[in-house]
Structures are given as C-alpha cells and as structure tokens.
Image (tube, rainbow over the protein chains, first blue to last red):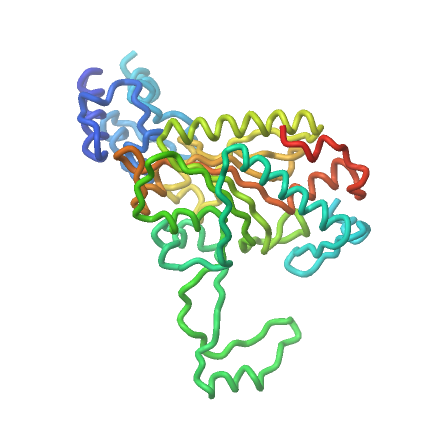
Length: 85
Length: 288
C-alpha cells in the first residue's frame, strides 16, 4: 500500500481532476471538498470506489456518517490511518 | 389533532388530504404567510409570483425525474382531435371516482413541486454582481403514499426565501435566518427542534444523490413537537448555479433557501395553542 504522503497526493489529484478550478497543490488537507462542491454529488460514489481501491477495504455505504468525506484529513483519518496503526 | 379536524371551525377536509379553510382559520393562515414575508423583508427579498406549472424540460436539468419520480404530478390535456374529445364527452366516471382518459396530448409541464425552482429557471445564464435575495409563495404538488389535512397534502402552500451569491454570502444568510427562527420558536413557545434530514430520493440508498446527502447534509428541518417538519433550511452548494449557468464573482453562484410549509405551520399552531386563533399568544405574530 502507498504511504500517507502518496495517499494524500493521490486523493488531491483525484479531486483536482474532477474539479474546475484548484490545482492538486491548492487542495490542502482541510479543503472542504463537498462544501465547496469540488466534486458533484454524483461523484461521491466514484470517490467511495477510489477510496476502496486505495485502501483495499470495502465501504458499507449504509453506515456512512455525515462529514466522513469532508476533506482529505478526514478521509485519511477515517479510511487509512487505522490500517496503518 | 388530525382526528379532530372536523371539530375545528373554519376547517373542512377533502379527499387527497386537502384542507378547506374559511373564517378565522383562513385569516390565521394569511397572517402566518405575512410572518414569513416579514422575515423575507429583513433581507429586502424581492417578491415574485410564478405560474402553477413549470416546464418539464427545465426540471429534467435538475435530474428531478430520476430523483423524485414518485412525487411528481403532471397537468394533462387531451389530444384535441374531435373523436378523441367525444370519447371523454360521452364517458362516465367510474364508481371509484376515477375518470378514464382518452388519448392525452404530449405533456410538457409539471405542477410545481417546490417554489424556489422557478427562480433558477428565471435567472438562468445571468451574472450576479451582488448577492440576490428573493421570495415567493407557491401552490405546490407532491404525490405521497397517504394524506392528512394540513400535515400531508397533495397540494400545499410553500413560502421560500432564497439567497444566491458566493459560498460565504449564502452561508451567512442561512446562519442568520436560522438564528432568527430559533429566537422566534423560543419566544413563541413553539416546540421546534432543528434536525438534519435527507430528501426522499427514489431508490433510497441505491441512489447516489442520497449517499451524497448522507455524508454532506444540506437540509436541516424545523421539526415541530418531534413529529412534523414545518420547514427547512437548505444549502444547494453551487448545484443550481452550475446547472443553470448562474454566475457570481467569476464562479458558479451558490444558493440556499429557507422553506416554510404554510399548512403545517397552521397545524403546529392549532396543535400547540388550540382551535381558536383569537386566543393564540400575541408573540406568534412577531418575527424575532
């Protein structure tokens, strides 16, 4: 599996590719991805698939809580950090 | 309260869960809308009036038909060929109250399901040089599995106050409106709690839009007495700005709205303060 820096860079690039304005380096750990609508509501499912592929774990969509994809810090904490421990 | 609807002077019920209002209750209902309008005036919201229908093609741009096919109601007219019209003229209404329609003309409109959609259609393609505040009251239609007078009607009245602007302008509008309403509920003695909610997307969890709302809540409801949403505060992010090409500050405009269900407010007042509006506390009519 990729290390933390690689995962964060991968996620920033993935979001930037789907968004109109920011470059990957402009997406920091606390950039609000959904609130700023950097990705659309329909792309949330693609983000879930991307996280599943990166982490190697499946995500139970019915158990997703508000805010879990707020920004890259939160995504890393919820879906990757525990694995690394 | 709904079991006692017939006992309230000025309130009759009809099939489809519709309420027929007259006398003091009609006057109260008008005062409730005046209360909403007083809040809208705080933001100098421009008042607009729209037709009861909106074009199906515009609603389709919002993916409305894939999101809410179970809620939509269409106005239909007949194919106007004389033979076809004669079929209706000589037909009969069945015992179940249903009328058998002959061929219908192509359907191009929808009965308004939410008041604020009209604004985005009207402002399509425009560039805003400042934040815009708008309000309208509309007769709305949503098909439901069951109906009850005042609390769940096929045809109901919705007042909305809308802000279009930058992300910060819309967030500021929604936050200060919420504060004003919280003060009002407390002062008026109306038991209303704010609760995050999702829209009733078709297909439930298999609909990606519902999943998006679960992880990024954009709707907060005003829930009366733990049982009934009498209104909601909604952040659309830049969905309508992108969909209808409305720009603000060099980017798609953000938007948000505060929506009030008029009949449900009347239900809440009747339930909380009794069937006689003249005995209701004076604080109810003062926007906080």
